[in-house]
Each structure stands twice: as structure tokens, then as C-alpha cells.
Amino acid sequence: MAIKGKTLAIGLVALVAAGAFGVQHWAGKKTAAKAKTLPLVGITQARAIDLPVRIESQGHLVPLKKVDVRAQVSTRLRTIHFREGDDVRTGQLLFTLDDAELVAQLERTRAQATQVKAQLEDARRAHERGNELVGTGYISSSSLDTLAANVKTLEAQRRAAQAEIEAARVQLAHTRIVAPMDGKTGALAAHEGSLVQAGDETALVSVLQFDPIAAEFALPEQYLDALLVARERGQVQVRVQAPGGKMLDGELFFIDNRVNPAAGTLQLKARFPNPGHTLWPGAFARVELLAGKDPGVIVLPPQAVLEGPDGHFVYKLDAEHKVHPQPVTLLRIQEQNAVLAGIGDGEQVVVEGNQHLRDGAQVQVVDAATAGDAP
View 1 (cartoon, rainbow, N blue to C red):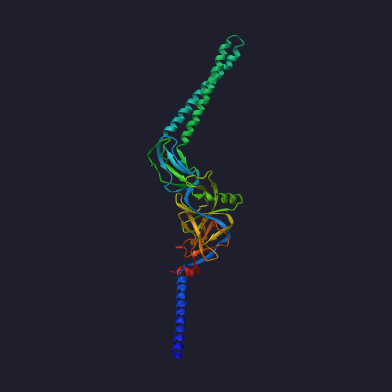
View 2: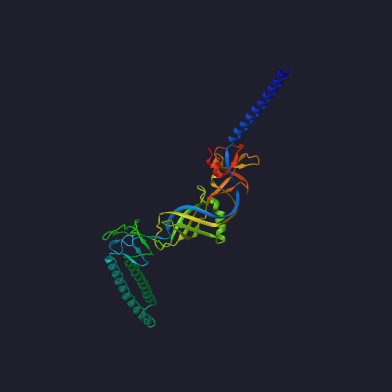
């Protein structure tokens, strides 16, 4: 009996020990399973740095000067002295118009002026004789006044005739149309032998200035303050991308006097040298503007910033390894950095594995590379 009791006691101890081991083993597996289900995330710290204010925009190239060349007299186009698309210089002869009628008109005005001149000289001699005779009584004072009035009338007619001669010369000069500036010609709208009209809405040709050339572009109004400060300090730099990817330096010369309230943008213009005519009016332009430095801005990798129904946010990590959404304002993306407002320097933020998190979720922090490979 003693042996049986001892054996039973040993069996009970073994059973209790086995049960305890089973409970501990089950609890360990549960803990391990729980640990495996925690989301794996990569963490980074928000940094405060001094970042150049670099703004990229898209616009179009436009000529600084454009002149539509039109006829100023109505006559026939006689000769064209250039080819479409030619580069022309200021004062270069472009068109010659038929001048036969205008030459004849100039000759008529000259003849009329000569006739008036002769009449005036005769009237002056008559007035001089009247002055000599008025003292002798052979001519009355009223007759002398009439002679003087005749002289003044003819003098006025002579001035009018001279003015008509000058007007005829001007009209005749309009038959030679020269380039108003250096530039490149466009398509011709008339050909030799065509009748051209003064004041015609269609220009004979347009001349565009190519060197220098300008770029028109717009910036969001949020950059206005930084731009004005940088311009006051002489720190504004502007560049445009030429064909082939080369960036050309230019000069910002125009900031519009109002912000477009509908688009929230500000129009600007910059001037660029274009001696090789690589920049073409009307073409798309990618413009880069440097407006000084933005000191102490907070930056994060762009993938750390998410967008929800209420705007942009990031997931902050607390001391208990729980994440919480933090609303932020995305100011711009620059140099592979998201420039933000609404978060402090040194705060820990989820940079990888943040797509399916929720407020208060417990996470397991790993390297960003490991988090990116996690299922």
C-alpha cells in the first residue's frame, strides 16, 4: 500500500508539472503570435534645415517685342526684298510699293506751291507800291488795308501748300517699308502684285525679337513673400531649360501687380539671352526660380506624407510604440524632401509601412528597408 501511494503521488506531481509546462508553452506561442502580427514600420526623424527656396514652374516663351508690319498707303505691292523666316536688321528694306500715283501727287502740290509763291510775290510788290502812294493821296487807306490782307492770305496759302508737299513726301516715303527692329520674319500675307490697303487688319508680315527672349510663367501666391524678400536682397535667380536639357540663366524683370484670385497664382516674366535662337517663341518652357534661403524648415522624406479626406498627415510614433496621425501642411517637394509645417524638429515619424495603420495602433519598429520588404 505504501508503494502504491508513493507511486500515485509521483504520478500526480508529474501530471501537474506537465500541465504547467503546457500552459507556459501555450502562453509563449500566443505571445509570439501576437508579436508577429504587429505592423512592421520604418521610422525617421523630422529635421530642421536651411533649404534654398527653389521653385519650378511651367510657362511659355514669348518675344519681348513683336511688330506687325502693315501698309500705310493704299497701292500695289511691287517688290518683296526678303524671304519668309529671314533674320532682318533695323532699317532693312522689306517691301517696295508702287509709287507712281504718289509721285504725281507730290508734283501737283509742288506746282500749286509755286503758283501761290508767284502770287504772293506780286501781292507784296503791290503792297509796297501802295505804301509809297498812300501819302500822296493816290490811294486810300482802305485800299492799302486790302493789299495788306491779300498778302497775309497768300502767305497762309503758301504755308498750306508747303504742308501739302511735306504730306505728299511722307506718303511717298511709305512706299518703302523697312524693318522696325532686329528680329525674325514670319509668314507673308501678301505677294508681289497684290493690292494693299492702309489700315488693313492683316499685317503684311510680323517681325519677332528673338534675342533676348522672355518666358511667361506663374507661381502659387504662397511664394510671394519669399520672392519679394529675395528680390529686395538681390538673391533672385531664374533659369530656363533649353533644348537638350541645358539650363540658361536669365533675369526676372516683371511681377504682376495682382494675384489671380480664381487660380491663386501670380504671373511673372523673365528675360534670357538667346543668341543662337535655341529658344523659340510660343514653345513650352520649364522655369526654375531661386528665391534666397528658407531657414529652419522642417523636412521629411516624401513617402512619409499621406493624404486623407482632411488633407495631408503623417503618423507620429509615441514612447509606447503607438502611432497617431498628425495633420501637416505640405509646402512643397524640393530636392527629394517634403517641406512641411505642423510638425516639430526631431519628432519620430513613420516613413515605411504607413499605408494601413490606424490611430493608436501598436507597431514594431524595424529598418526602413526591412519594413519595405514586409508583407
